[in-house]
Amino acid sequence: DLVLLSCEVISTADSSVADVQIAKTHSGGSSIAAGSTTTFSLTAANNGPDTTGTVTVTDTLRAGATFVSFSGTGWTIDSTAKPVYIWRHAGSHAPGTTLPAISVTVSLTSAGYPKLYNRALVSSTLGDRRSGNNAALDSITILAPAFDRSSKTYTDVNGGSVIPGDTLRYSIK
Image 1 (cartoon, rainbow, N blue to C red):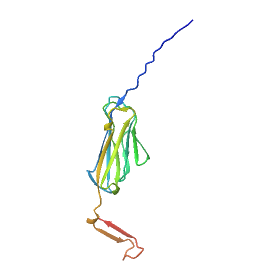
Image 2: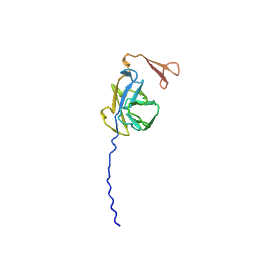
Image 3: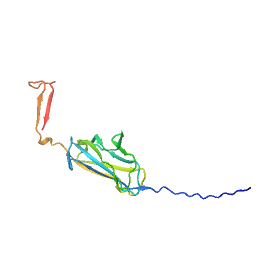
Image 4: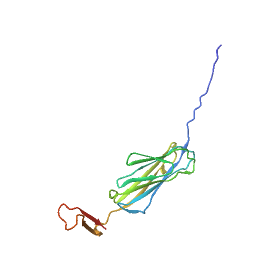
């Protein structure tokens, strides 16, 4: 007996998309002295229309900003490629969800003088229909120490008059 079978194959592409975005600010005002610390706040959100999985935030610290610490509920950090820092927030993130902020404390150095620019990027496991909001740029004017208006003093740690080989302690105010 001859049996003929017929089938029709229908294929549809997964068209799930999200619109993740990131915002970035810092503490301490627009001008901060070299030698100080500041905390960057990075906030990621899923604007939808679909639920996304893991959200990834990447921040490359440029010369003039040295990583001190971070906090952020549910975020894990990968710092193996310093000065590139990568945070991941696993799970499902429904449309309209703003994820907990990532707080990144950095020490500012004069290497960032006169202006330190810092950019963070966000991505998700889904395609992004609006990539224009996947980056946030923040800038800080780095103030150099004003040595010309400071007073300098020294103390001979060994006591007495200064002679070659003594240890001196300098103070700049």
